[in-house]
Image (cartoon, rainbow, N blue to C red; front, top):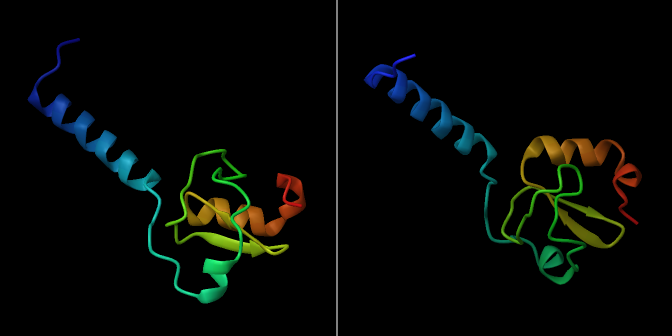
Length: 87
């Protein structure tokens, strides 16, 4: 199969769209409570992707902050935190 310019452009567009969907949202913590609570882990407990302390998708649970790579993982965690080892 020969690739022409249209095929390559389509492939690049698909790859760029996929990368944009998996990029975590970031923002600085906005509340004093969030700044004083310890972070439980730097791993999203749902998909096991690395997250940092600038993510907007966080949950306060049992006195700790849990960060997530996207809102879907955050919602999944909130449905059953014990399932993902949050203690």
